Amino acid sequence: MKAFVFSLDAFVAFILALVAVYTLIFFSSVPSAYYFILTQAHYLSRDALLSAATTDCSILARECEGSILDEIAKGTANDSITLSYVKTIGAAIPNQFGYKLEKRAPDESNWTTVYDTSTSTDKNDHHAKTMKKLQVSSSIVNVGYQTKTTSEKKKANPYIYNTCPASNADNKHVITCGDSELIEPEAENVIQPINATIFRLTVFI
Image (cartoon, rainbow, N blue to C red):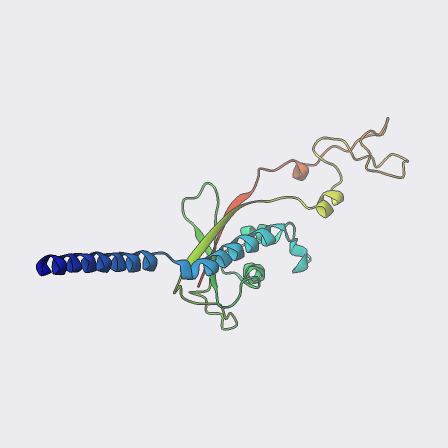
């Protein structure tokens, strides 16, 4: 009888030990401690890209057209003008995080790194240099567009309407102009192919 009790006790102890070990393995494999940081990094990467895509570049330079991402898409990686726009994205990311901005045209197979805090030699950039816990990436397709200010400056549009300089009307921007002579669209006013660039922003900590 005592042998049976001891055997049962050992069996129960063995089961409890297995449950404890598997519980430790399960909870150690779930990154619950990093959940809030993971969520924050995701919001940072997504919101920083959306802000750059919807902010007019005129806040930084007078001679520019489009959004901040439009200007970054036009420039070459690591040139001073492009970096001045990239720093606006970095300003939205706290220093305890690091980030890497990449771009790629739809017809390209490789990503081009525009800026990476882990390889940057800028001493004024105090963002994180290494990834110790996690990293999150967000992507956006940036399509170049024409700002309202620029479109107003054009003498004619490719559809030959909405421009009546010979009209005596107070409002020159009318759809119908009677017998007024319309201005033929110039070559540079013809609609150009869409300039699309894929941007990927990786935020790490």
